[in-house]
Amino acid sequence: MGSKSRIALVAAVVVLLYGFLSNLLVINYLWGILSAAGLIFLAANFQPALAAAVGGFVTLQLVLFQGLPQSTTFLLSICLPALLIGYLARRHRGGFRAIFWGLIPALALVGLFLTAYSEVSTSVSLTIEAWLDEFALQASEMGQSQELLEELTSDLRDFGRILVELLPSLLLLSVLFNLTVAYFLSCKLGSKVGYHIPPLPRFSRWRLSDYSLGMVLLGAIFSLLHNPGVRIVGHNLLAFSAGLYFFVGFSVAEFFLVKLEVPRLLKLLFYLLIFLGQVLSLILLGVLGLFDSWFDFRKLRREVAVSA
Image 1 (cartoon, rainbow, N blue to C red):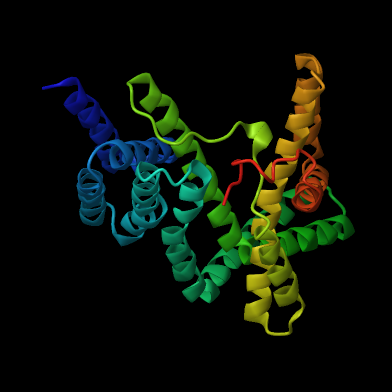
Image 2: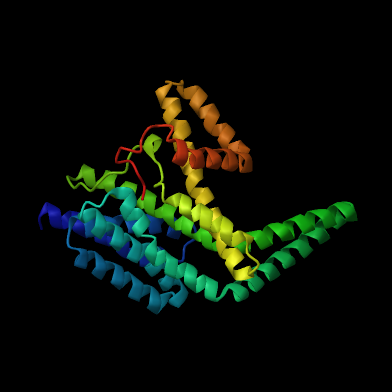
């Protein structure tokens, strides 16, 4: 067996092992990213049909031993996106462009979620209510005031309602993050063994296409309409955009930290403040990323550093 065949075999084995690890918490998530990286590597550097056969085998394995929900999740969030990304990378379409196109199969997963939205919403709401009742009982036994408990449980109910409403956008952001990490791993590990696909730009040069502003505008318009279903779509478009522009804003900040040669210790303190800031950091960096689409702070508009 030649070196090329051995490399392909290792990548295939990594993907095939997902079928045996899919029911293990945490491990199945991490191995899912590795499986996506393996499929991207196979589709980009070998025959796409080989990658499709490996992914199809794992999907069939999951159908037989784990059930339809698990196999559907693998197919739409790992297998098909990775195959599409690998195929586009093989045709030198650019890293970020390939990754964003890879979200198309995940949209089907979001569609399946929306068709069962009322059932999912009811199930999650009942789970939250049961947890809140248990929490209130324990807090009451510890002597907490009834007034404080009612205010706290009301806030938690509102948070749960918002969380359920924004699940589609959170799902897409999660898939996008996983696929980006998988692509990065495929690039890095592939280069170690002599295979190259279009690399991602340095983090300090990440930016979104100017067309992404249309998604923000559409989300804002939908959010103002009276139809509840359309309003949920608008909220999810805004939440998805906020997640994207947060990373763009983070990239802008990183660009100027590098340009100003800020010492590593101060950079670590800056990252710590972002982590501790949570919602405030999300808002500030999201706004910075949004403004970057208008003002092009880093003068990247003429460069090939665009995500989609």
